[in-house]
Every structure is written in C-alpha cells, then in structure tokens.
Length: 434
Image 1: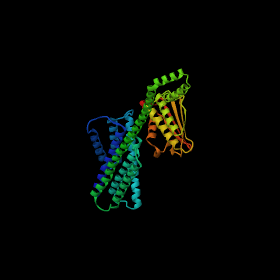
Image 2: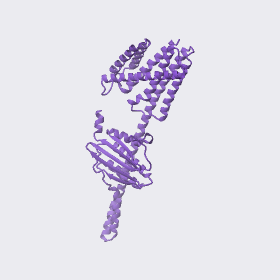
Image 3: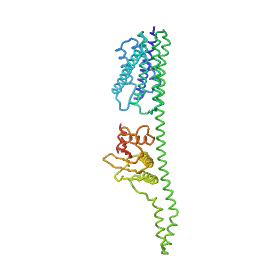
C-alpha cells in the first residue's frame, strides 16, 4: 500500500544524488561546453538512468548505472586546470563513494532511533521510504556543512549560520519520526508530500545558504580591500604632509638666508641661535633611512612618530632587510597592519610600553619579527590568533603572507606578544606556476 510512496522516495533520492554530483562537478571543475541546457539534459538523463536501476532493486545494476554516468560526465563534459581526465574520474568516483557511506550512516541512524523509540514501521516499503528520505537529508546536511569546505575557499560562515544548519537537520529528523509514528494509517499521498517536502526543502534552503556563504566571503574581501585602500590613503597623507612642510620651509628659505647673512656681517651672536632654529625646522625634512625601500621607510618613520606620541619605545633592526621583492600595496598592508596593531596593543599597557621590529634575510626567505608589550594575554591557537579576536587587519596580514607562500606564527609570552613571519622572496613566482 505504500508502493507509491516508495517509488516517489526513490525518485527524490535519485534527484538528490544527481543534484549533488553536478554541484560537485560545477564547484571543482569547469564546464567544457557552453551549449545552452546541455547540462540540464545530462542531469535529466542521469536521473532517469539512476531511477530505472533503482526500481529494479538490484544493487549491482544501481552501482553500475551511476559509475557509467559519472565516467561519461566527468571525463567528457568537464575539464579542470592541471587535472587530468583520469583524476577527474577518480575524484568523482571517490565523492560518490563518500555519498554512499553517508547514506548508509543516515539509514543506520534513523533505524536506531526508530527502534529505540519503538516506532519502527511494520511495512517494509514504508521503512524503505523513510530510510531513503532521512539518508538524503543527512547527505545534504554533511555535504553543505562539511564536505564542500574541503574544496571551496570562497565562503565565510557565522555561528548563527551553523545554528540554522543544525535547526534544519533537527526539523527534518522530527518530521521523519513523526511520519514513522503514523505509519499505521494508509495515506501514501500524504507521505509522498511529507517526504518530498523534507528533502526538497532541505535542498533548497541549504543551496540558498551556500550563496549566503559566498556573500559573506565577498563582503569580507570588500572590507579587506577597503582597509588596504585606507592604509594607502594614510600613507599618501603622510607624504602630502611632508611635502607641505617642505614647501613651507622652501618658501621662506631666501628670507632665512638673508637674515643669517645680515647677522653674520654684524658679527651678532644671534646668528648661531638662528642657525640652530633653522636646523630644527629642517630636521623633519631629512628623515632617517632605515631600509632601501622608500615606501617601507616612510611607513616606519610615521609609525615611530605615532609610537613616540603614545610614550612607546620603538627599537628597529632592519639593516640586512630587502623588501623590494614585494609589491607596494603588500608592503603597506603587511607592515602597516602589523605596526598599527603593535602600537594599539602597546599603547593600552599600564606598564612598560615597547615595540621591537626585526627584519632579516636568510637565502630566499625574509624574516619579519614584531614584538610588543600587551596588557593582557592574547588567545592563540596553533600559532594563530583565535578567530574571535581577528579583525580585518589580521585577515589582510594572513592574506599577504599567503601571497608570498609564507608562514605566520604568534606566541604569547605573558605581557609580550611575538609575531614571526617568513616570506618567500620567490613566492609570487611559485604561485603563478601552481
């Protein structure tokens, strides 16, 4: 009496598997052809083939039909950069196997719950329908929450989103158990609606949440770019201020020279004092040279001035450093954020306030070490600052380090925070080859 519900559950099961396989292909590889509706037709053919094999209740035929379609689609309708046809077939087959394992886990889990609650359906067709439905809900949940993160980097999730995922899974479980508890009544059409709604609603909502993940990712990227532009603008303002001061001095330089000449001709003692005043005025226009890169040099001068205004001692050892392999924007982003964070942390200290910057080259690697005082311990996990404490600046630092195939390591030493960064001078060249 539940044959219709079983058939419909089987159909929904096949649609779900095909949907996830095409999701996997679309996210891992690129479509080989641009013919309109071609891939929709392929998906339809796949569903029909899988459904035909499924209705025969023959596991071997079911597996064979899926593997044939996987080989055909992955080998001749998709292509990937630096991914061979054989590797695409292997990865697709492995993913299908993982889906099969998650489906088996879902069947075992729902059978265990129904047996524990004493609501195991007596009708084998209804039991099979419930197993189909719940296993696909488990499959969808694990795919979007766990599996997709293995190959998709363009996603940022919040704690609330994970709560939504769990709430959806709990809702599906309750609905399936409610269906099992009324299995004594003959309502196959009602069961079709309930089971189809459970799977399809999960499919739609989880697919929507995937786009929300991408939206969060692009929003974060946008915020990071804004922060980079802010640093560049601040650097521009520093240069503008220096230039304005230089123009102001140069505008009156002739007058100053005339006054000094007059004072010397008259052998007046005020000439020496006046010369000293002029020297003090010219000091800001003759900055220290810390490194051979003008952008980093200008940045260091500004951060040292900001630290001194906050009562922070600033020690620098960068004599052997060479940062000319870095892009200008990366220099501003990396050192601007590192030193801004150090100045902010040291400035909030009640005791000794200090910052130490050390740069050193070792073969094709550059070591950047920043040490600063902190007022309270910084939460660090596996050498990285805890996610809850990460701002846009720290994320930009990590992105910049990744650009040069580098590593970053934070260490908390009580009232001292140490950040060590290694950058590969040939990092961009390595990135371009991969």
